[in-house]
Figure 1 (cartoon, helix red, strand yellow):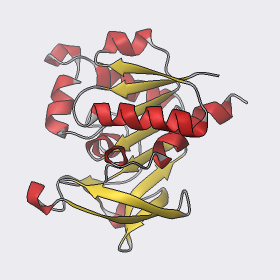
Figure 2: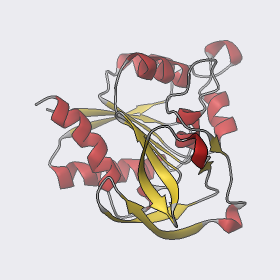
Figure 3: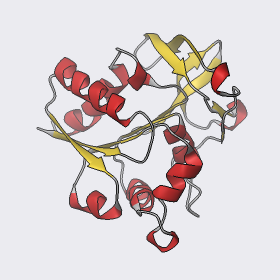
Figure 4: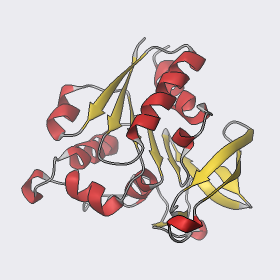
Length: 203
């Protein structure tokens, strides 16, 4: 099986995600095709198995990927509608996590948790530190850049990653949201996991 990955090309470290996905494909021995999604028409054209929502600035991402009626590309509207109707695996990092928890499109959240933007402070407050990932049962290099923060009492799904006892990664069914950037490291663990969700379901 070839796993078709839909990468939302709205903003953020998109090309770093491509590199991580390619490494994950080699590491997991899972063939992939990466479709770069920018518009609703591209979303409908490519029938993807899994999706990646990179980081960036959520205001910009909502504007450029918003509804066609408001001058956007319609990409987010199409993606959110699809995710509400299916169990397609998705990985959201940083701003992508914000969009999953707060799509702000009039529909239900795609992950049952509240999240606060730029909760750690400004760019100068960005940092790197080890994260304890229960999903893999090992440490992971966490890169936090103007990172959001889950409101800990609001999380109604599985905690899969913590930093200093605070939840920084959550999972609900086959959707994962991380407040850090795994694509900016040499560890492709989360991208391997994403590909395996589609690959294993086909067996």
